[in-house]
Length: 246
Image (spheres, rainbow, N blue to C red):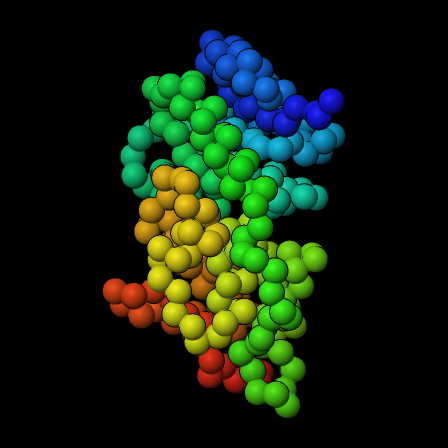
């Protein structure tokens, strides 16, 4: 018998937690409830879940900080995470997406809607980002060391020899760009190939991840612009990067 997907539920309101545990259990999942961030970290370290649902307003730690802590744990950046919060401001949603979260649901919400989103995220994350391809080309002259080095087995990308700390979606976006330097990817193409076509993601999701990618690339090469923006079209990897950072 197949094991039920383990869902880490981090929610300090017991009434909400009880309802979510019930609907998740009846829908074929194995929920593990934690009422505090510290307890969630311990549970995650014991066994990373298939997905984590994080309340932003926890008593001992902001949910966004908990997300960062979990992402830093072994295997953490491969676990899909969804924010659950009473906050409905757009800025909170954008912050969550910029961090690399998979989705964001504001209270009040339908428990069945949350379960449907959990299923969608798990289905999406189980698919390969793109079909298998030949070894990735790199934006560099043939005689120089690679500017970008893609290691698909480790889900790792190096930029001028330095490994980048990327979320799952940041890795997916940069992987596509690195594989085809100069090729312009529209937002719709990135949404389809990285996030999948059956979700509620939107253009700002792509823009937020491009923004965080650029910030991480700047820490390695502050004067360079590896990702080009083509206004009204999309994004492409710069084909004219120097062999060494300035």
